[in-house]
Image 1: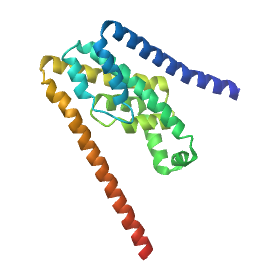
Image 2 (image 1 turned 180 degrees about the vertical axis):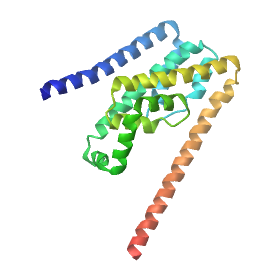
Image 3 (image 1 turned 45 degrees about the horizontal axis):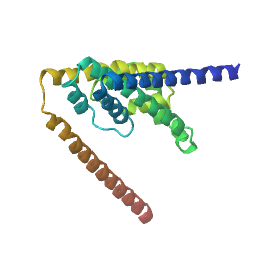
Image 4 (image 1 turned 90 degrees about the horizontal axis):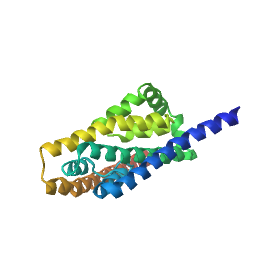
Length: 216
């Protein structure tokens, strides 16, 4: 019975992944044949919504000013859903490593997982629609093995309206493309500076902690 249950769970996981990849492939072919300009948007959004995030609102708005906002929203959210599945799979395998698996035994994780399971779907939808950082919710979804189908659906429901509104806004009130695209490297540079600064602070704090322990 256990073997049958495991086989059923495994098949369910593969079904979601295979279906998502099929949709991604079909979308790529359709875009290549009908809207080749949007193929870049699909690839970019897939990369931008992984754990190596790139600024996405500017790209959505840029394409929204040149293409139908509904089409831009659909292409963008398909890329986001695939990216979400990629991260989900990566996190799942990371937690199979003993070093990281121990995190699940901590009280903090258990409390967060308990609370998250109460509001998982709605929290994913809200985080997807708003500027709230999506990474913590995506991390908990994979760590708690939240249903992949519901996970992808929540991403779609949350992010599709957001992308549409961004694209529609640019369609109605165009912002110069030079400003939209020009802000991307600026945001990346600021993010890199913040990352390096935080690491410096962490190293300094760690050295001070080690020094205090040695003195005592």
